[in-house]
Image (cartoon, rainbow, N blue to C red; front, side, top):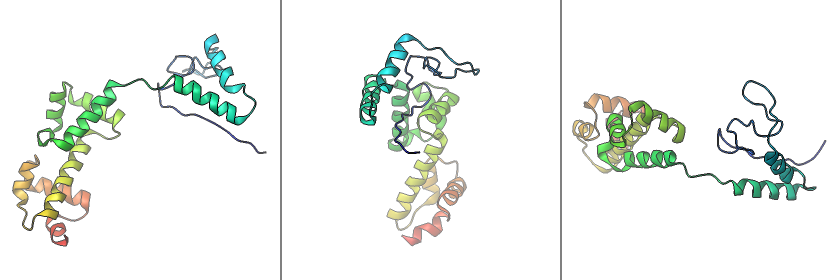
Length: 181
């Protein structure tokens, strides 16, 4: 058996041929609960436009045209997630998740959901990685680093917390890392 296949993938709610976010408007799709959906006439016409061409190149072109006509709509929540992640990277005042959430007008839990959905990790993880990157930059650029002062500058309660996070992330404590560079 030989042949070519063309396909398209979309995440939940990103693209459906007939309008429903559960795929229920797509002919032959299985709706939530397992019942086969009938689909609407517009969806059947759209599916025919994509599936009817005789050769693979024509089907791929039809699929491209179908999907491009329904291009992604701007998602303001994605823009907010990108803006907040950039803020963590660029502003030293955004080093605490609670502060970031408050400044964005969100609860901490809403901020966590936003980051999980659009960044792929939680805001605490992003803040931790930023702190560690800052500590690495100081360790590489300064001959004698005041780790206690750096910990305070990065928003840590004390030097021990910085050392713990640094060691867990980098694999060696900061004092062992600094002389290597």
